[in-house]
Length: 473
Image (tube, rainbow, N blue to C red; front, side, top):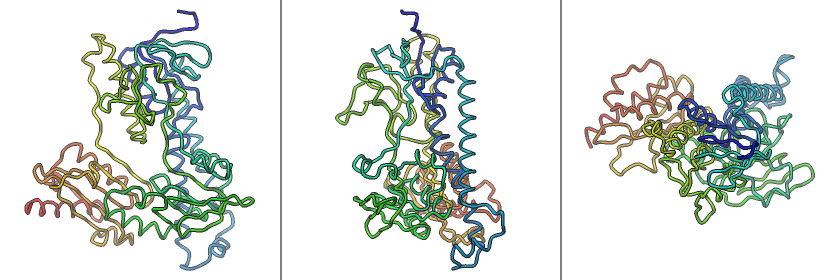
């Protein structure tokens, strides 16, 4: 091979969460590996995803907590004037959130360099053959298998890009803004749309929101979906189930219309999901097969692309765009890649199993779905409901909107899944995920302690109802 070439066991393309976990797994197994990323370095989560969004949500809760202390009905300008001199402003809170994001990105980059050191190749890559990558700096990498963890990019409607220009943004551009916007139309009310709509509204931004899906945050359980829509409709004007919107540039503003919503806004924030970043890899040169829509055909158990030794992980799969899922998939893809090499030292390498599905919207109150979703339940499943009106802690918090739904299998008496709308629901969701993954029975969970007064007592009440319903089933 040419002097500018190198040979490895497995090449990992993409140094985000999935790629870092894949590389770490390969090195622990004693494999020769490289980690390739053209930058910018830092995971999607740290730069434009879960971390800046949570920092902004936290800032919004601080400001909203102050607002709630003011007399009901007092105009915002009046109560702001009543605040003591030197108080924090939404702009300052916005800046603090972005500074926290920058610190997290810097820490992530330091971690990456410490992990990979000279094995980190900061350049682009594309396949030239099933076992060969051509790098953007002219070098070549020959490998026996590949993990593709190139992440994703936010979707942006092409028909509006030219018309609205810089006024059409995704969270990528939102978190690059120095100044907090004064008005935003959120287009897409999935998890990110709900989080950002709520956060911006609580920071005093004028927000209107719309989405094609008639269900907020794509919540599968009808009772939780109804409770969430009722609650968040008071946070910002919303028009759900709108297939078409009108957005026209008018000077420095955008006229935005969706259903009954009409507003002049500074930005249209598009939150319609993210697409795998695969176009520049020339995956066809690696032998990867594609479906009619041009998407790679891959096995969901092994993460292997059909016809190749390419393994997908993280957002590159287009299926579970969550950080903890990306970390697991990076590990699984690396383990499967090593086993595919046929070397005796890796033939018996254990492969990590998938965790129970867990998704959380940090909307305060949080929305969470764990295990099987309501739409996936078998006909014989038993479903029970616990509400905030029957929970002491929820009453103290003046949160009757709290709702918890549990799904159980009558034969095994184990939980199948859960859905909830609840303050601090992120913690309750984890408890439920652990219980489902351990295959705990209703009786086992009822034997555990439930401190009073806590929101967790809703789980105790729901389990008691489940036990009763299971006896009748």
